[in-house]
Image (cartoon, rainbow, N blue to C red):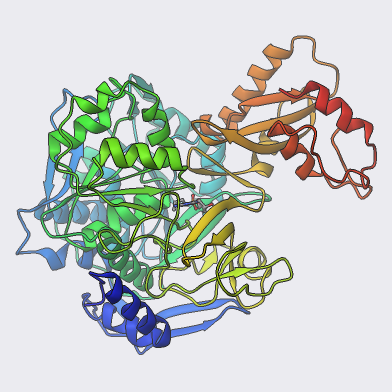
Length: 630
Ligand code: PRX
């Protein structure tokens, strides 16, 4: 087996994986159920760019996530669902039931004209049906595009239209703590501007009254009851699209990252087993939303492919109280817990009694994902949750990478707080200097790139291969550029230092500054805006907006609130600026480019150290901005 169980095994396997990558991945891929084996393991050219894994191979990922575990695991729990309300009983879905439900969704989609290659938008809360929906699409070769149910109709419109989704799977509403979110209302508003949408299938969840348009809108339970619970799995080429998932870009609209069937499956499964050292019978809980890549890879595809039990949690960490996560861990005896630093930091602020009243002794491995974890949060997590006996795997990866790339391996890698530590087998990082040269040796800092493909690298941006090339393969010739800064210390350990482009990571969510700016500019009083990140004690980074209005605002606070609401309406509440400063001008170069470096310093409160301002068109602008900073 290729999963290391000691650090010396890791080094041996790693060496082998980069010396003979094709042999390495072929041996791993061999353990899956293929309808036809591949002809070639890898074809690639990062200059084009083009990457293909397991070409000629035929498979269906749902057969690997479900059918191959039957009949042995027919009665094992595949999904353990913990609802929003702790008084509502949890639900266990066995592998057999999962098979039936996924087949029904597949047949339901077929009955409404969805065919292989069609795009289906999934806009659902954290319910088991979200997993059935994804797998139901994959069963028939439809391409799913899951949109996080916290996004508003503007974001939904962009995503549906970009990939021309034919059908939307949604719910009447979503529970989030003590709130209800009107999902169907948001979808109704959105689809008015989405001509490709023919049908909307609505899951009943909150029982909120909703507007259903005859001929277009259907109830999930009615449609599921009409179809059979068996459905042959479509034969997919290894390089056929499995899903599209949108992630923010540093300029313009979100990027629809395309993942394909074969490589994604192999990599998710391998990294799930390896990083968490998953053992049969363990209960795995990843707290991400299925609307993000973490949910795709480590709630649905990775754990199910490994035949694990995956916990899906509908609620929020702070309701009914700040002990909800710890309550769920105790209640279900969770063994592996994978969450985000932002959640840890916010729970850390609550009384430690919320932790201590729960028995967390079932925990064996802890994980962190989405942003750099600060040392303080790391130690709190280690001491209070892991009781200093659970390794913390700080997993670095991206929507684009499909799976974990740099991370400790539980019980194998010696940990160092706030370090993602070492590349996984098959991963070949390079740290680049500003001239585009690979930096050698240790004790260095630069930008993180990848020199060689791994099976789950996103293959393109849906409908825009040129943008894929420009964004990831043009900064460093022949290499994939991650957009992150990175250090390699004296021990050869990697530490991710954060984005070096115009993406800010707010509570673990990627946000493009350009996208937020264009939402702010939608407010009729706003002439121009510039958004930067600043350190935020809970969110990691907060959003700081510098806004120029057509007229000097009379009621600043009121206008701030209106701008925040505009952003919430267009993108979603997560994109609301934390701080808005009204300014008369922005620091621009003579060619009209905003000097964000200066704005970042202001936002960080470093007013005395703004660096070189001599190239500014109007240096007075900076003095005014400094005065108004908060
Ligand atoms: O900046 C890195 C940060 O999150 C970015 C990717 O965001 P997204 O595509 O939304 O995927 C998040 C879940 C995989 C990265 O470019 N990031 C992610 N994990 C870490 C991290 N930064 C530091 N340490 C991590 N463990």
